[in-house]
Image 1 (cartoon, rainbow, N blue to C red):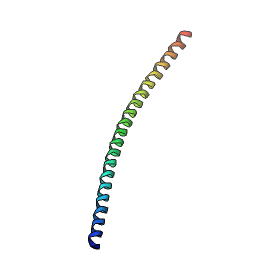
Image 2 (cartoon, rainbow, N blue to C red):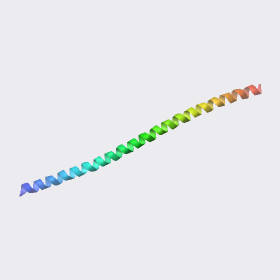
Image 3 (cartoon, one colour):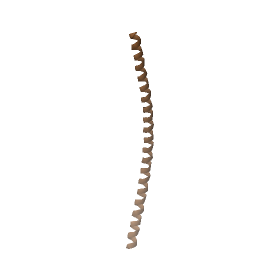
Image 4 (cartoon, helix red, strand yellow):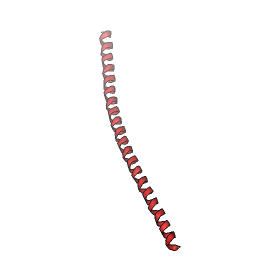
Length: 75
């Protein structure tokens, strides 16, 4: 009788461990999805930063040309 009780308790513990494992795997999958989404956002932001840096450099070039022309016109 004691062996049956111990076996029953063991089965319950194993069942709890399996259920916990399933829930942890679900959480892990969700975390992986979140990480992948954040990586996508990060890549998008890096691309936008690069585009803005190029636009900024272009505007700096235009400003230098304008200042040069403005200096020539004042001379």
